[in-house]
Every structure is written in structure tokens, then in C-alpha cells.
Image 1 (cartoon, rainbow, N blue to C red):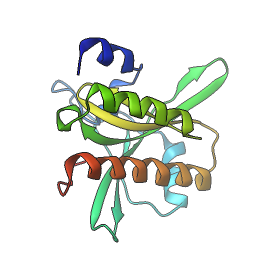
Image 2 (cartoon, rainbow, N blue to C red):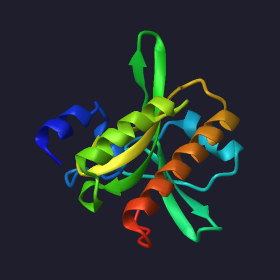
Image 3 (tube, rainbow, N blue to C red):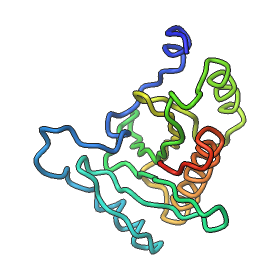
Length: 164
């Protein structure tokens, strides 16, 4: 992918989206109890990663696949509104995310009612940015969408590999 296309696709994104702690992190970041309450209310199993994000593994039985999904452990403020990210890795750029594919994904973003494709480092994610006051049921709907779209794209670019 040319650097100009890569720059054009680069969106502001939390470093936490990688779902990995830095080597110098000694203890997990505090998890947001509001997220925990919503996940518990819907019966989800999860773990809190080193930077305070909630990590879930979705199982797609029909396809015999799994998909990693994160619910951000922190919010960002926009005016008086608090926004939380729900994100799932879909592909590694080296798996064939060319400039042409990137433009296709940008066009696909326009058709999405919720969420968009974003790049962080060498990973392509599907990300939904939600109001913090979203209810547990609507959060689950958004999570289902994010995990499903990310896994569908992962299948397209990695075939039988199920790494993300």
C-alpha cells in the first residue's frame, strides 16, 4: 500500500485498540464497572486486559470460528458526551489490504449505520463509537455487529486461518 493511501486511511485511534499492554506495564488498568455491569447483565464471559479493556471471544458455531472483541475500558469526551469504543480486529495489512481494498472499505463505511473500518498499526479493525449511556441490550447489539463484520472480513483475507 502506498504511503499516501496509508496516510489517507489513518484515523485517530486509541493505542488501547491493539489490546496489548506495553512491556513496562506492571499491573492492569482499572476496569470500568459500568461496562462490567452491562456485560454481566447480558451474561457475557470476559476478561479485563492489561490496559483495562474488556476482552471477549465470540463463537460463530456455524462457521466453526471465533472472533476477538474488545469493549473499551475508558471513555473519551466530546463536549459533554462520553464515548466508548467497541472494536474487533479483522485483518493484518500484510494479508492483502491494498490501496484498492482500502478504498473499497472507505466506500463501505458510507453504507454502515454504525461503526467504520479503521487502521491501527498493522491491523485493520471494525470499530463502533457509542455513547456511554447506551443500555446493555443495545451494547450487545453493537458488539454482535462489530464481531460479525470483523470475522467476515477476516475470512475474506485469511481464509481458513482464524487468528483474530
